[in-house]
Amino acid sequence: MARKVGQIIARGDRRWLIRVYLGRNQETNKRKYHNRTIHGPMREAQAYLTRRLRERDLGRDLEGAHITLNEYLDRWLEAVVRPRVREKTCQDYEGMLRRYVRPGLDERLLTAVRPLDLQTTYQQMMQRGLSARTVRYTHAVLRFAVRQAVSWRLLLECPADGIKLPLQPRREMQALTVEQVRVFLQAALATPHGPALAVAVATGMRPSEYLGLKWQDIDWERQTVSVVRSLRRLKGRWSFADTKRSGSRRPIKLQSWVADILHDLNMSRTTTTSNNPFPEGIDLVFKTVSGHPVNADCLANHFRSILEAADLPRIRLYDLRHTAATLALAAGVSPKVISEQLDTPARRLHWTPTLTCSRTCRTKLPQK
Image (cartoon, rainbow, N blue to C red):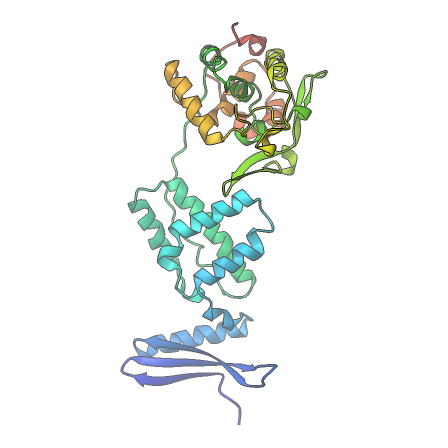
């Protein structure tokens, strides 16, 4: 007599045990079943059984129904994310899931997660005052995870599809004008971090890129600097990492006044490094008096204090990339050339600068 592939067994008032036959264990030869208790009317139990049988027929691994979302996310981070991305990105993913997803959904079975659950989670995030950007980024990470579950046949459909996300207002790009840059450089170069900020506004490099520069990256004869690494601080330790993308490795032509600043800095640096207690700071172009690598967050605080003291608009440290692009565009430099120097798509550079300057303005910014 053929064995039933699915059963609905009454276990009390509005309580049903669903059993789906999964075959025999290859090692023990014992029968395997997927069991699930359903509370509610008979039609809900029948609907659940029909859904499970359909998933089994389509090849989905029903044993995945015993994995909680929390357990699955741990395995996904270890098996998929960690080997593919930088450690900093992996930490960002882990933190995002730990803060916003795991508290409400971690003990829920992976197969029990529904689009409404995710929609509710995002709504709660908005009610807590989190930005639309944070919600959308959290959704992108979670969708990346559950789509992998579909590929692994743990899910039949992706519960992250069809979610309504909050609109993210477009942030107006901020940049300093030519005259404001002159004022800024005059104030910045009077501080210990002035050379780093001058390189930032002249080259448009990312903070992690110019803070990771070593003296060997500078070609004094050609007046160029090579971007070949980034500097990160992870779990209390400094480390060098690859650039953001493989294409982010690039040479950048230095303006003459920036090369002069770096040359003066090179001449004034201490030549004795054997007693440096922070070997990771050796040969770095920019470092603290004690030999530490410069922390980007500390530099950002220093940057804001300079803007405030000079009575300049308050912008982010990262906005110096936009400032560099704006100055170059206003000087008539091709967007393609700028995009290669900044390592950013040229389509993002097609805005109309609200300033005017001559083609030679970039070489005359510092007023000594």
